Length: 120
Image 1: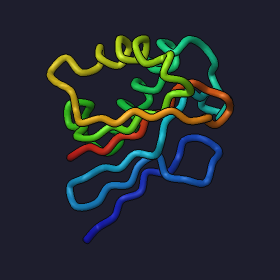
Image 2: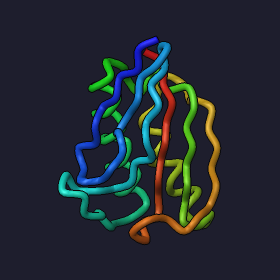
Image 3: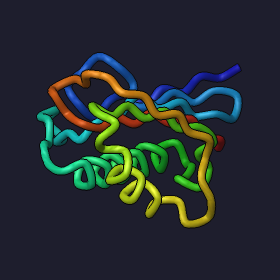
């Protein structure tokens, strides 16, 4: 069994993704600059930034958004649920992966965190 780690592009001690047995497991993504600074903005702006970052991370592992099978979402409040859904939906025109959404106090007081699992 081969495990491939894709080191974080941010200054933190984790891998952006780990690939094993045909699956890619991504770490939670938040809206963050390449230097690791939080990017505050609307839920729509944060979601779009995160989904573009996820797309880039998946590309490093030679897969795409269309190969995502499971998504875990954390929102700072369920008041953001509708706005999040509109922004998120735009990234899955061919159908949605399985998904869970919970609320939590998020790192850096951001409003959205997304973690995905995909197939290669």
